[in-house]
Length: 623
Ligand SMILES: [Zn+2]
Ligand SMILES: [Zn+2]
Image (cartoon, rainbow, N blue to C red; front, side, top):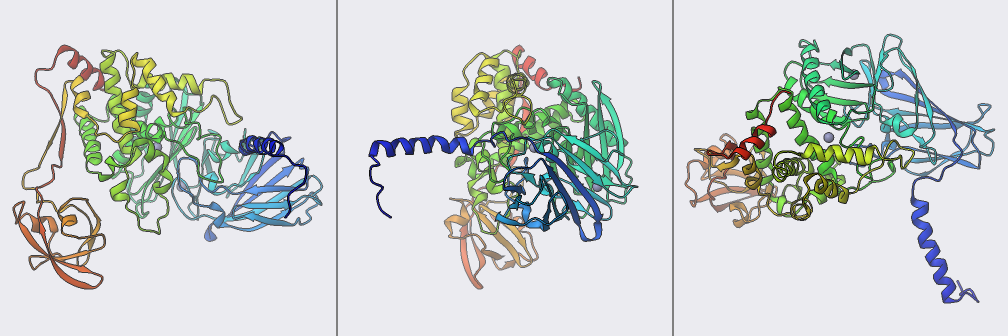
């Protein structure tokens, strides 16, 4: 390659500058192309093979090619799953049914050659689906439970286009979704692709449906239970009615006509799930309706509050979405953790929880954070930003997450509690965290529409601080610097005292001395999953995967480690038989004092009038 003559440095600089400026513009949301006529057709005909067939007909196509893209992830679950891996038998045809050539641009993009298309392309493919959870999909002889991102491709550049969806399913199966309050409708209109995939479908014959009204809105409760127990959903419906009533009294009226809870109770799945959507939610409980009612209601209280916080009031990165790659936000502590905190408040106000249950759960959240070694390394914002590493992301490589991370759910819930108490304290009980969330909702969701995606616009992290400052009439910058983007210890008692309460941490009687490990059960003893830095195991040189076989020659295959440790006082030097890479050796550990693992929140005696006022306001029950 040779230098181009006559191109001076100044001109090169201008070209580079223009290129640099053009970059972000090109990378932004697709330029407005003339809309296509998009019809999605879903065929549910092969339950035994777990294969769903999708046909996407795109009319009014122009140009040489059209790209069909399968999402890499699904909003609400911050993990790259590459749904394209379950796509098979892709084909494309033109206006006369003639086959059109296509190529794969990358693992998730199918580029169809339009030159012989005649203005219409019909793409057709099948998707393997056999996972019951809030992100993947399942099609079997009992139902089709479908989450759109794992099933539907979009046409590149045309996510904003309106579309229709037609579902072909066995006649006796009813179709339940946020698209319609009728179970017999089979054709739906969506204003854009994002709404299509934000509306999960439950299609089956076994799903029971109940409903109630709240503030003129229809709330439906769909229950598909695989357990053999009593599946009468009336108790669940009664509990949900209390939660919905409490949460709708806490926030501005949301803009939906009907809302659907889609529950699955399955005793034999590996883990449950909950996933928020604009006017529905998928809740999957590992267990039975009668045995896990409290868990189902707790999950529902969290998911229903998402219809305000996360779905409508949303971080700027979360809608419209780039489905091809990770999107980043530092605000999941607010979108998820504060939702958890407010769900506890709503369980209290609905009458489903007592004051004692509410305070016990908050104390438990505090214990969880205080027992995380990662709390001194990772902030709430950083935990949010790095969600892609650990929000159910597949892990093939070993990690040190047990020592290096915290949960934005957990710390976010505690920040919610502290912000709530601090706001109440600084405003002498006249304002609370709910006023902050309502202000944000008005400011951002009810703002002029910024994109095709939906009403309003997303918020940035700085907007949260501004809203807190505005509601409280005082500056929370130090709070955010120290506790939200910083890793300083949370000073619970400062804020609990405002409500005449105090956190008490103590060592439960008969607690064993500590050796500072996270254990994993093993047939032959105790496997070390993580070693806490500076603890007894660390000082003795023990590490991850070491197998503790015996304490003082007493086998750990037959006796519990804690029970064995109780035989010694803190400070004792105890010989452990340790197996490491197949070799046994004896290693002495100097035992640490027992861990203070009892956390309770108690009333302060001699509380002042204002403390009692805030306490009663904070802990008021059924409204
Ligand atoms: Zn189902
Ligand atoms: Zn959530």
